[in-house]
Amino acid sequence: MNEFQERLAKYAELIVKLGVDVQSGQEVLIRAPLFGSELVHKITELAYAQGAKRVHVEWEDAELDRLMRMQHAM
Image 1 (spheres, one colour):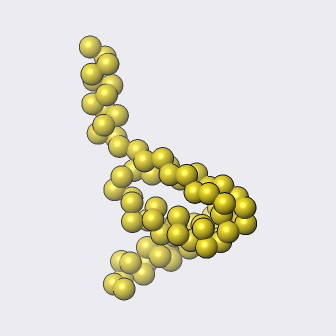
Image 2 (cartoon, rainbow, N blue to C red):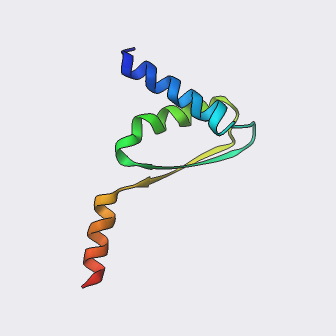
């Protein structure tokens, strides 16, 4: 594992165990931009390892949102 991957894993662990404090049976919602997929994958993996019942991920795409607003503004 390279240094970036190690830091990403540590950051995900910090989020799951300390920031969110995922508990057994809990459902988790993650909202994240598409470019954050590696971190979201790590967080999801760790949340399930901590006993999360379900992890829901809502992907955000700022470019797509902008295009949709332009299309519907006309």
